[in-house]
Length: 190
Image (cartoon, rainbow, N blue to C red; front, side, top):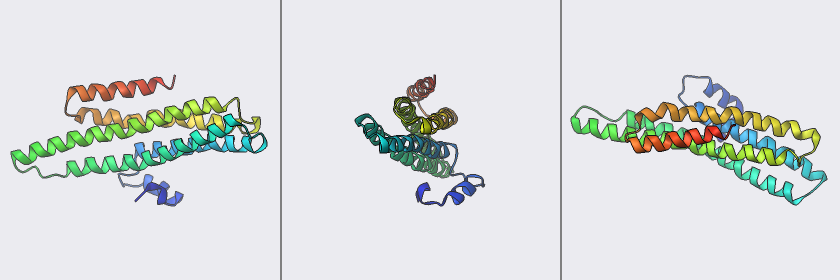
């Protein structure tokens, strides 16, 4: 089931419960989607009184990013569930232990790639907000800035999942590649 099918109150209550999902990565992606929505809203309002090609392009790009971040939230939950499934594999024999270890390493890569993808989309939202600032009406600029502020919190929050999963990634080259991508995305905040 998609997180987006939950009523907002239920989403909040699940987040504050013992349930393992939604967790930090999916909540960060939901926050990112809502942040992108604020930028789109400001562009839509501004476009109502001054329809322009740059505002139309901003709206189209923003709607794409809203949808991508919504999908990233569900992908993060799926990646975590994959990791939990690998963790629950049998480990009575040496063969089972080896298969479990390999499954956990693959799941750790997936659980790192999901927040990296979400963070990359969040970096695009930051660029979108910068494009929006000079175009939107002054009365809705605060929404653009609020969206950017939320992204500046959500992006590193999503990347915390990479940090927690990297030690379980099986091979050094993949671990290095994932860490480099994480560092590159963190630099987008500067």
